[in-house]
Length: 340
Image (cartoon, rainbow, N blue to C red; front, side):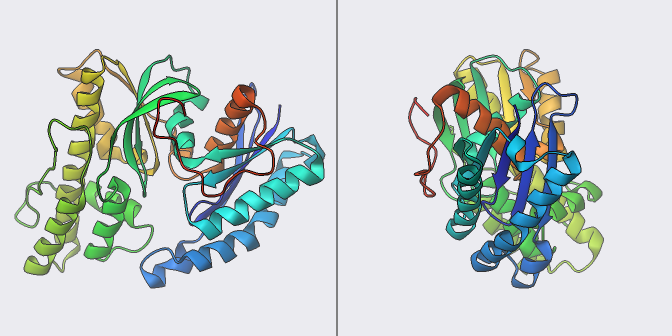
């Protein structure tokens, strides 16, 4: 079966072909918008929507041509239906619906957060139940996943998501877009616990499994305003301490949730799952006192907003529930109940 996935929830336009069972099941084309939005210090929704509209037909044709696949060979079309930027979602969703209609092929609307939640399962067999930690620019949540169609959200952010805090931290320190990535790269060069940086606060909200990252972001702002770091070294050191504070909370909350619900497998997804320090902290924790916990990360192409996970999740939804029809709601969000 050949699945065409379309992702346009924010500022990356991506299309992917998913052919399960092949040696290399995924092929993808991505059009980045960093240069478009960087002068404004963040994503401009109208510019993002226009860029999606311009890029989608071209990269879809390029992908099909590169893979030697005719449009009529596609068996299923899947597109992100939310959450995300409304205009950007409408472009991708309408393009996917129109393509499916013209080809007389089934269409599936995919929830963006669910796609992150299950992204790693496209590459590795994961038994149920497992604990999902989704860490993206707009969402940070913990969910007990019972099956491919059922999960219960047990923790969520009360204010800024982790990815949002990283992006805003990058802006405070003067790093260009993509902010979270450039902040992470700076942190890898910096040293933690130096006079340039300092131990930023951790908000654990005990005994809740919820998250809060607005406090650490505000602490960074005040620290930068007070110290006025000008050298690259000083900014890198501050970045290292700031990233450490965020990753520390994510790891400890996930481990606490796994212990609370008696789950030994944690599956991480979302753009922040690519962070090297996060992966290192999980590895250290699992090799220490929680050796019975297995932590699974998706490969790098499946971490950020990508069409691979949309195609894979689309096929799973199609098998479980059938096609969405053409009435899929662009404003759909994940369901905060046992039944997803």
